[in-house]
Length: 83
Image 1 (spheres, rainbow, N blue to C red):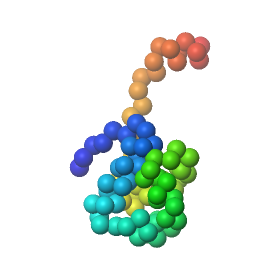
Image 2: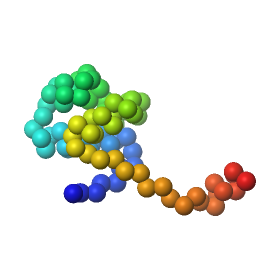
Image 3: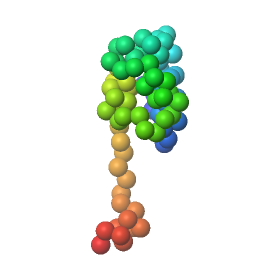
């Protein structure tokens, strides 16, 4: 298992592209198994920020990628705003 920190849509797309290629899938093949269009896969891999989250998560799941979120302690600046 490899842990990869993703901080941008571009990095997210690159993660999808690397793993798609690891399984020797074309964009068309990945789109077919995910139930989306080739254009969506292309946009996702390019890091388009407006790609639908639900469908993006489905693509990750289809590639066997598990997404985890680490929630930090609330920073002082945020605490000040919500008080």
